[in-house]
Image (cartoon, rainbow, N blue to C red):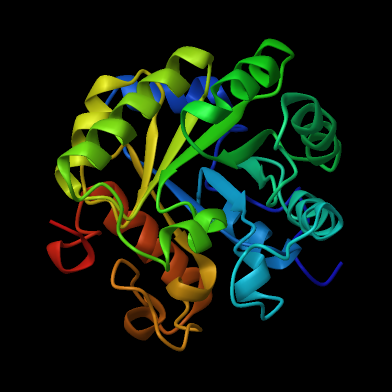
Length: 275
Ligand code: KIV
């Protein structure tokens, strides 16, 4: 194989599981997640010690050229989860559930099963209280779930654009309450996207599951960035992202720098956050 296979040398000494993530949180050890979509990049991430990979439905925008994540289908997700799985044997792989594939708990169960069979170790879905029953149902049946609150891109039309969420007291209280409900329902991880730093810190302290921030400040248990942003491929990069390629001049170097800076707390800086 021209690209690295799952047997490639790895900075991860053993496979990352949900137990590893809980241990990281307990011990205050920050971990790193990258949203990526193909086998060679997945193999490179394993080599660079990236603990968690997200096959995000952001692929609709970053790979397929749509202007939102809404057109993404199950078939597209499965194709990319399979590719990422083929490149990696150690990182924990999350697969996104696309728009309207988990509108009911039964539909969620069928579609989550397909994502798991494609090679994911966990599914991710967006939403607050309304998905709590679904999270419980999947979790009780052995499917780990990553929840996603704040700027949930599948609701972009409801938000009227890609906007920071939780800036007023009512919104912040709802997001905090949703996080607690999802934690109680059995979610194993929580992505917090584009929320004020203080809110992300309060949520991280209030829930047992680890939190992964993107545009949520430094107070979360982990960070996630999209590979296109790390490598400077995004024409108008979001405020919370950083091009690590300019400083390092190589893809492995950029991944390593992002991971090192996240673990040491250098990234995100205040210029990447929302007050
Ligand atoms: O789809 C995705 O890549 C995501 C991350 C930006 C968190 O949801």
